Length: 227
Image 1 (cartoon, rainbow, N blue to C red):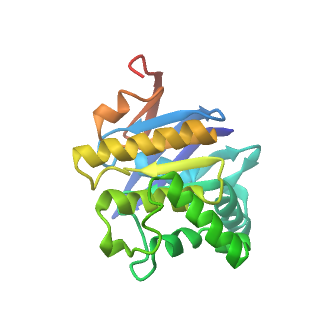
Image 2 (spheres, rainbow, N blue to C red):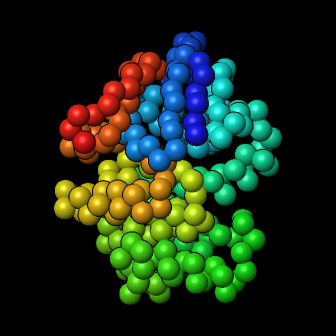
Image 3 (tube, rainbow, N blue to C red):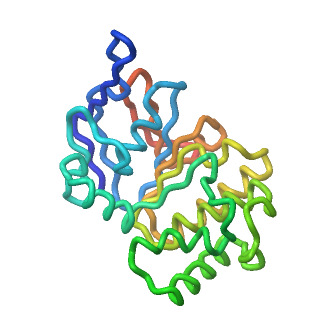
């Protein structure tokens, strides 16, 4: 599904050039679950942004299903993200004035889904993450774990091929972390997703089938015997 070829991302910090990614080669097959770890500033989130088409490399290719995301126009790239890629972030990114159901529905608007279809699919997505009784609640009326479940439902309601998660348990305590990981792993298995996650949590990384480590823009990948 994904193939990254000699991907470099260069930032300028004052007069200094910083390689967030430095000649990265990476293959991710359909249905893989890959966890990305590394020190702060090592390039983890930059790599995830490349995979999600949220940023473009300075050089190299980011190929998804035969298409180089780096060469797409902004409108075509937006379409790929809308149809094929779901995102979950540490900060939930819910709209505070919208209910859980309305927040999930927002992911279907760019796809042109009719109102009735949006409502039905959003309700079903929320039920799938254990929030069937919370459709009409605002984010402020839910716990952090519940808000992250809404964010997961929003990412998955459009039936993407890929789920990208950037520190999705970073704002949660240990018990909530485990609950959210259970939801994410169940969705990965049930939906046949390609699931790629950035985390600083070693207990999560040890359970992943594949672990990528990024340091100073360089990547190494290993099969995880502890998964």
